[in-house]
Image 1 (cartoon, one colour):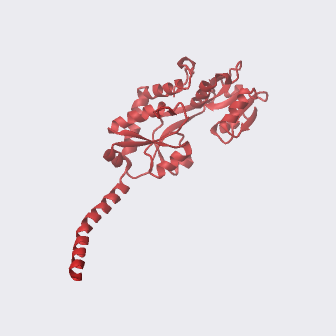
Image 2 (spheres, rainbow, N blue to C red):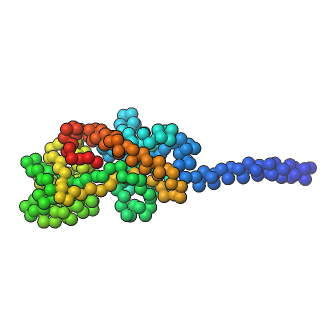
Image 3 (cartoon, rainbow, N blue to C red):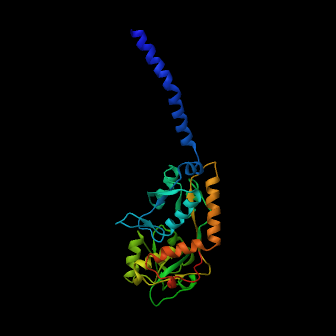
Length: 281
């Protein structure tokens, strides 16, 4: 009797082996598939979303709905793949880690720094992001030379590209750094500075929240501008990034990306007519 039971169990186990092998093989294939293959298979496009980061992202706390320039772009990209969007809440820094961990497929609004490029790949630029300043009312600088003077007080957030630009192009001015952007805004609002160095999208968004800070001015001679790109995973299969690059080139060429960006800026409270006309993205 014992021998019969043993034989039956062995036979049942043998019958299960092919099924187990198939499951293991399927799991291995899923783990090794590229972003292009996974999006095509699941029809889901995963993106990092950043709460409170207008003009790119905004979450309606009542409904849970997301909006902003990056959301509009993501929706349009998803249409290319016939996919739906899946949102993963993150931060600028963590979105790089999320790409590495294969938690997301796209990260928006990233400057392609050399340090980041060691870990992830970047698409073509979505826009070239110019730098300027929030200037106190009554002060209208046009060039970096206009603020590169000992009697001009400049406010920056420490460790940012804003600080790098200020110290590079306005070293003669009195530069004061603050630990966080919020502390820098409070100092500017309190009259402790003549200008606060800001990238265009960041500065315009800040003025949308608090018009009393002053006015936004692009600075020229030289024009300081950095690319803003999408981040993707580093992988041998380049089909996904090739599709995204083609999407970016077409929508930049037709002016559609500019419209999405302006729409995001308007959500902060800034009127279209208040956006500097020379801001071409």
